[in-house]
Length: 286
View 1 (cartoon, rainbow, N blue to C red):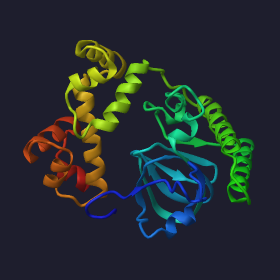
View 2 (view 1 turned 90 degrees about the horizontal axis):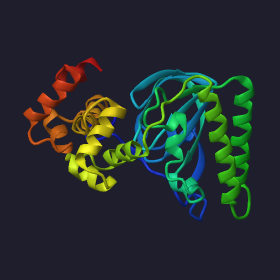
View 3 (view 1 turned 60 degrees about the vertical axis):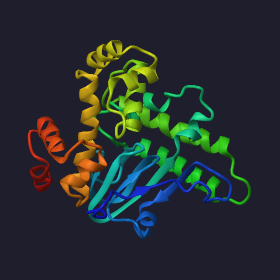
């Protein structure tokens, strides 16, 4: 379990190579050696973790899986990741900040349009066949050579190799599943909720940010997400409550306060309405 009071957040080391660089490749062994590593963490950046050997139970964003060679775990900023029953698991994780790509692409929704990084993805995992595995490993090796070579790093070359990795994995993911596209405003709404759900629960706030009326936003969310705007915002807080119940030892009262519920009893009622169980029973069963 993580620290009793919070889920550790891992942030990007922007100046690891001297100048600011928003891309890197790290090994699981390096992560294990961190004094903050507990087996549970939340990343503030994107990660494409490729399993190269060994086996372990992993979980990304509430989705469990057995990691073996060829598994790719796709991590978005804010996702909670766990590694349990680690049996010699080895992996390489390509990590990057959104701005590393968006400083080049004009499309601010570029990453949200990638199936396996989309807010409505059905799974964060991809399985690679031998051919694709070897291509991705080759690109990871090339990125490592550029990062650790002498002289100034070439961000354009690194960006091109990152883009190739993303496109190769996009092709692989689409061969297994399709992800329904959604209105750009709904995508933007999801992003705004992820950013402001702790402090803003009113529909009007999000409607103003999107330059639409509250009624229009309600219709849009209902049509695309099959729930009301208010329900979606509330469910985002409940999802965070589930993570805190599973991965911390915070009391129900502390979680209610941290998530800005008016009272503990109101939090319990809201949680029970969504999950059909109480916070303490949910914790006990997970």
